[in-house]
Length: 224
Image 1 (cartoon, rainbow, N blue to C red):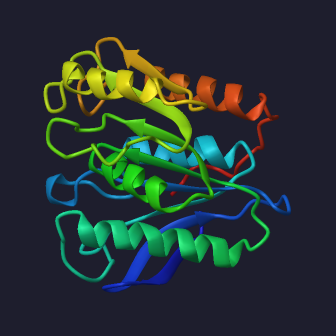
Image 2 (cartoon, rainbow, N blue to C red; image 1 turned 60 degrees about the vertical axis):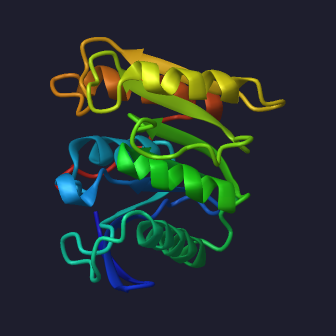
C-alpha cells in the first residue's frame, strides 16, 4: 500500500493509504493501540481492519500517532493523538472531496481516540471499537453516542475486562435511533493472540450487514 506523509499538529505523520477506484467512495480511518506499549499502524489487528475496509471499496488510511515510527512529535496522553486523528481525517477528506461518508475504527487506546473523534465530526456514520479500555480511560463523553457501531471484546481480556465496559455499552444501546452492537470473541485476550481470525470474522459480518453485503474488491498482495 502506498506510503503517505501528511502534516499533523506536531509535525509530519507517517501513514499507509489505499485509494478506492470508486468515485465518491467512503473513507475509513484506522487508529492503532497505545504508543507507549508498542502500538503502531502495523499492529496486526489494525492491518486486518485496514484491508476489511479496502476490500469493501473504502479509501482507507492508517497512520502512526506522533512519536511513533517516522511520525514527528512526542506522546501527548491522548489530547495530541486526538488532534492527529482529526488531521488524518482532514487529509483523507482533502484527497477525497467527494467522499459520501466516513467510518472510524480503533484498537484499545485507538478506540478511545476514535470515539472522541466520532463525537466531534458529524460526518462519521459508523465505527468499529475493538477492546476499548473503559476501565483506564473516560468514555463518559459518549452521551449520547451519535452513530451506530460495533464494540468487540475478548472474554479473557484482563487489560480491559469485559465487565468494565458492559455497563457503558448497555447504556449506549438505549439512545434513540442508534444501534450499538456488541460481540464477544471467546478465548481472546486484550491482544486477541491466536484469535485474530474470529475477531476479523465478527468485523466482516458487521460491515456486511451495515453496508448491504457489498461485493469484495480484490486488493493487491498484502505486502505492507
